[in-house]
Amino acid sequence: MISADLNNEATLPIDLEAIKQKSLLDKEENKAFHQFLKAKYGGHIDNDIINIAQSVSSKVNCLHCGNCCKSLQPSVLAEEQEPIAKALSIPTEAFCDKYLEPYEDAFFEGSMLMKAEPCGLLDTNLKCKVYSVRPRDCSSFPHLHKRDFVARYANLIEYYGVCPIVYHSIVALKNLTGFPQETH
Image 1 (tube, rainbow, N blue to C red):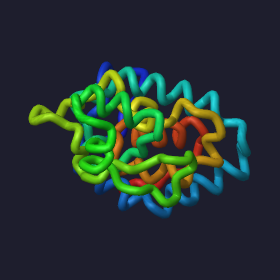
Image 2: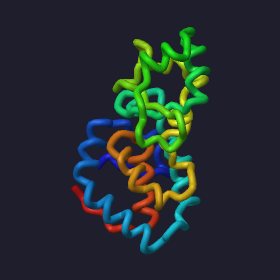
Image 3: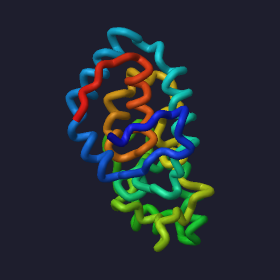
Image 4: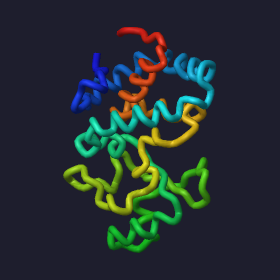
């Protein structure tokens, strides 16, 4: 099993293939966990998941993983487009044409999605070319520090098989809450 004891590990494993496979096996369990959280905790689990995520984040080096940059399409807010274009030394319109596509379900007016997976802003060493001005969707990923965890769970669980921080945080939350887990 790829789960780890948060208190006894200096770093946590970044075995992306194992996490992806485990996420497929845990699909129904994760749905049941959402129902368990809603019934037992309502909206009163935020501090626990925030603390867990902070602990997990300190034990996973995102720069050694980068799976989010390789497999997700972040949204780019309208006000983020010009600073990113400037960092790339290209006109904003050229940045939008080359890297972005319309985002029909956008919560914010003018938001667009990165076109490609992996992200077109990764250099040949898989480092972000615009790290200092990267989109908020990237800088706040995996969004576990935000309130209303139970309400956002259905969206967050989509990252369970992508992000080691999400994976290890959800497993730790299951352990903390006493949720009965299946062993695969």
